[in-house]
Length: 323
Ligand code: ADP
Image (cartoon, rainbow, N blue to C red; front, side, top):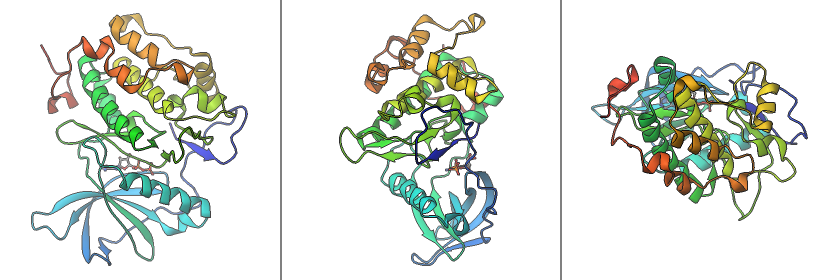
């Protein structure tokens, strides 16, 4: 699913299907083979292509300063896509927020520089793809694995929230994995900084399957940190069931299901009652009644179940045995 284009003026009813962020009029970046950070006098050698999204393309690069070349991810945005003030403000916000965060489960932001053509961001390299890629191979995860990922995700999210950052686009495709199967939250393109206590955000944004009901239906009041908690509930459901709870082909119908809190646990999946209770409590429509991140960590799903100390790399293709 493509992310909803953030809208300046929230609409009363989210009738419009979401638009992809890619601006089709803009040609994607094609950076040189050797990318130069003039100010720091560093050369980065482009060694591979990692992916693209929105206005950006992401490459694997080798940092020329290190003899045993250190590899990084380099996110490239063409300046031609930054002609409007709005596009610039958005990119600056992403950079400002991402570079302020340092946590073991958040993709580390290294440097930011530009040349005549592009803006470059070097990031910690996540070699093992995203949880979405892994879910496609595995179809679904065991409840033990889901517990492991959830604990790391909540750790990262709690860190963001105490630093006044709402991610607003938590989803499997933005949860990258390092070579040891640890989660690294990435893509701060829709993140928001809460600068005054009690401030509410009003921009309708997110990815349809993961959007909290208050973003869509309480536009007068706005939304805050609890939207990330909601997405964590959607993520947990998706990990153990194999597809998002409100998923259907029609985006309007997804929004109706989110509004009416309509989803079910397929009986054949035999999801444990504690797991169901955890998901059901997180997917509480009223954000003020949703559990806090710490309450989720104290839920029977986490407290009474096995949280494996690590996930073996073999889990990429087959369920690990945690007995
Ligand atoms: P956008 O903000 O434009 O959506 P993303 O930050 O999501 O762009 O990156 C687009 C794609 O690039 C991702 O889906 C992923 O495949 C790849 N990618 C992004 N960051 C990294 C990283 N740190 N390590 C490895 N691959 C990455």
